[in-house]
Length: 252
Image (cartoon, rainbow, N blue to C red; front, side):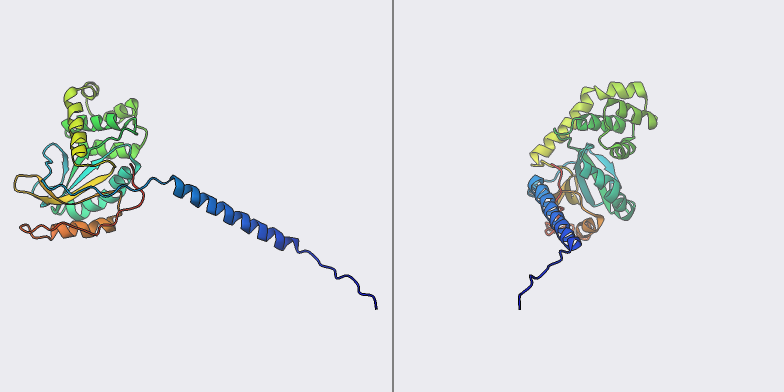
């Protein structure tokens, strides 16, 4: 008996589904590879300074009698600094600042990669001279990258600052020197990224003996245990803190 050739029916839907799945997997791998290859390496945590750090010229939020101080070196054009200001700081204010346990000291560290960060820092310093630093701080971080001169003037107007005085202040050498002083202190401390945090306890002369120095935006759940350690630490035997995990994404 003659043998008939076997007929095969191709299921084109199955083939199409298989090809589509393969293409999606390849695309996903390509995207991940691109992101990894373009991710900036996280800088090592900064060294803990051995000497107490002065905060006498910083913008302060919270009681001057708070034993624990968080020094923040920040850049108004830095997205991670903005995340801390908008998302984490309000929690710290409710839980630690209002209760008198923590004071925050803001220092300027405008990065050269941000074209408007220096001008924004000078604008904040001018607002500080009129007692409006923190309202200016909040507005600057709400605006984000839109920080050209016209935006700064508009914010000043919305805060009811004297327009003429504000414009003159932006070019004032004293205010520029105040920002430059913070930048120089950051360099002396070895700080190269923002936001940078120095967490410690206030000394008898008003400076801060730093226990932990770190970079990056952290959720409030990671801030709490570190602040609690300093708040609850013995004033006479102040331990250095370890074990704080920073996020991978750090703005440099």
